[in-house]
Length: 273
Image (cartoon, rainbow, N blue to C red; front, side):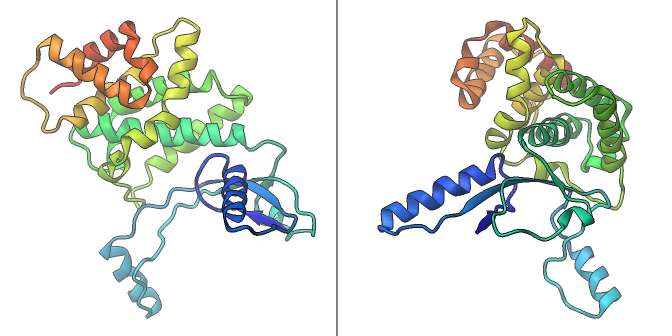
């Protein structure tokens, strides 16, 4: 038997195996032999709206309380064994690989990390959706800077990464995918450690202070303290302490990085209206 995890967690196959085995052991059950397949899904699916429900009803005559509106782009990557065989999902575009981690990192850092950047920094510029934010030249410049930092630590050919980044710009700009920045901004302490911090740590390890990652953290810090104070030059001491406390919540080791904290404070001031 092959158990295929279809959630959106990194390393979901191994996580599923561990949880199933822990529960079986706690219940005193003996498990049958099974394989656990790790998967990665890359497709933007915003939360449904009342407008979506109305469109589906008008088009189909059916009442659907939670229609899934999604973009044309899709990617499904699978890694693992199927001892009893499997459907030919590759005929529909699925990709079978020996290691799903690089694909997970590419999606988390470029797509999801880009989303977090727009959610926090783009909202400071008055935008409410991804499509609005990516149409702003300043936000597109910030995306390019963040993507350049993240791409340095991805194990794909540069031409392939460039094509993926261009596809992301087209996907983000799709006006029919109303992906709200407020929804993306939720659960920052859970999202940022996997979307932003791996790149930040890698850049700091090579002695760099990545401006793109710093901008995400500075914008997130302002988001934590909404409404944004209407002052251009807030006191440095409280701002530095707020940055240290916020970083400690993400990763205690970062709270001792004075260079990073100073950079976040400076960027926070530059982002203020």
